[in-house]
Length: 211
Image (cartoon, rainbow, N blue to C red; front, side, top):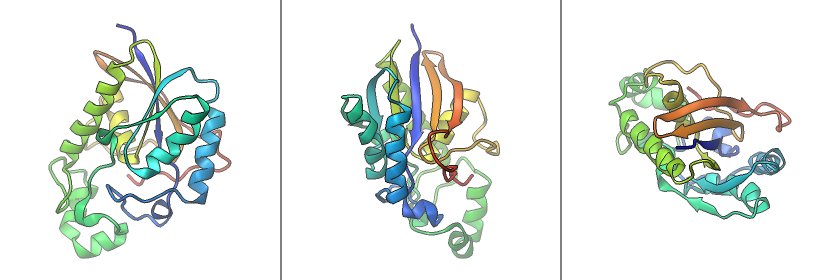
């Protein structure tokens, strides 16, 4: 079977990104810089032969996808499986606030314990299985074609690990910037990494997703 070419993109910047607040499933819109980043993607992807554009159903991902999808004459197809990890009681808080309120939970989270989930949230293992499975199912619909997946920092981290066969607990040494372009291939054997963190279309480096 022919490989599916995937352009995987993290949504543009939000005010909570800039303030290092955990968003999770909280539906925070793009800020002015994030909307500008989305417009930059339109130019960066103008020559890509896309057959489909999929996005997390959270507004920041849909809005990021909408600009370049419209330019390509394609609808944005919303996929809940591409949502960010659900962080429950952590959502809306900065990292230092989480550490102060729940020091033991914060330590398990920072150590990437696969079986830890904040109260009301997902475990890392469940999140990985959910988003990687959703991305693989979408890619399987388009063998030999090119598609875009617009999602979130945590999802992009999981896709990188799936493509490079890295353990969930391995420290992250790669960037997951807002509106950067990342390239993967997908076949029935899984994901393969082609290129990562291309942000040449942005005037300044995009904010990374904290590891």
